[in-house]
Image 1 (cartoon, rainbow, N blue to C red):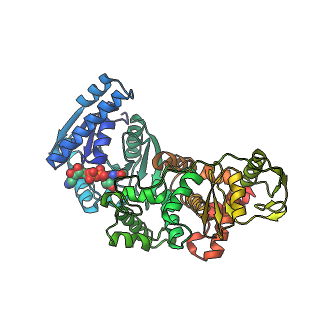
Image 2 (cartoon, protein in one colour):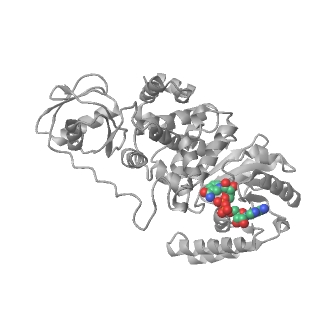
Image 3 (cartoon, helix red, strand yellow):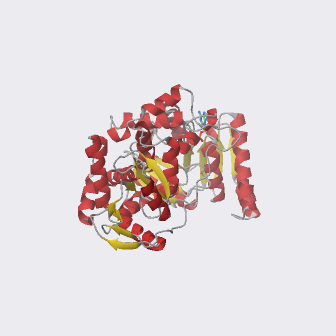
Length: 472
Ligand SMILES: NC(=O)c1ccc[n+]([C@@H]2O[C@H](COP(=O)([O-])OP(=O)(O)OC[C@H]3O[C@@H](n4cnc5c(N)ncnc54)[C@H](O)[C@@H]3O)[C@@H](O)[C@H]2O)c1
């Protein structure tokens, strides 16, 4: 029997359900879209058809393909119409009891079907136990907007059997997605590995190392992220993020890396939930909520002055190349990370390779350091003096979390990288980033943070220790 279903059921016609049904129709499956709320069903089907038309206009598929796909859609307000489906993907509201009830009922209506859930945070294992045949239950985690995001995370619950995994994988691939495998646990693979982007950003603000707008600018210009953590929190909803953070805490029995931030709680209490309430970390009025990012200056103005850069890591290489381009007389000398201008040591800075357009300068302010780094072609951002600054701390914790996840068998290193790139739009995956920076340097930064904070949160993953030993 082919693993690819001929008849697909989708439960819930909201944001995710209608997108998933669109993918099913396009992949050639007869697709039954169910929603108990008549207007929601109508809205979902309309948005699906609009999506098909828009794709045809943009040349992503032909008008004939869009028409054929639309003809494969059946909508219903009766769950019984899912009979005969070989795969049912559930995208109902994120409430465990509701989903458990649905799984119990659907497993009676189509006893042989594989039942997949699109939940982002409810353990798949707890939903599987509500189905008549738990071995047929699996997680299929799509990302928003489902038709455009190129990733599906397939999650094996404790009870999931081989057939469920095969059907979910074949379906995800037929829908044109990169399918990654994850085990069940807080945030599965993608959201778990993405946690430090928010968690460490919140800590940097709590510790007054930088403001939310600064953290965002540093992540965009220094790290190449499309959006910073705070503007993303505003987009998703600070209340939604806070609930996710609390669920991580609960499911992990208090893992310190995943402790929610009192800052989030305060924003929620104040009703500042982000874009949807007109105010979160930013204010959303008529104009733009933040200024355009500055362009880095062109390197120049070195005038033959002596610039000595120590070490042979990627930061040192980058600085020497920039120094040459800017017209300094560049030499190699001093300890790793040490920079001297005309023989005088230059104060603290953080640059995160491979393509920083911004440098964090660690306070207190001094004009000469700012002039130097501007002349090297960087936008300068002054932050409080702290190991790793903002971006070093965020990126090192992303690498560390990925190492914990891989070491615990949550997913493979390749899948972790694909997950972060395709599911969360990170500029590169954490394992690749770790290799670029050097796992030994990542460990050194984490150790410095640990020394300054003495928090278990900054303990290195066993796999990071191993990779650091190998890299040294
Ligand atoms: N929105 C996202 O970014 C995103 C991303 C990944 C996963 N998810 C998950 O996908 C699921 C759906 O999220 P969404 O954003 O599409 O929500 P949504 O609110 O847009 O859609 C939910 C739909 O379910 C319908 N519904 C209500 N009661 C139902 C029932 N008893 N049975 C079936 N359907 C019912 C509603 O009418 C609505 O149309 C959730 O589990 C969510 O955690 C969401």
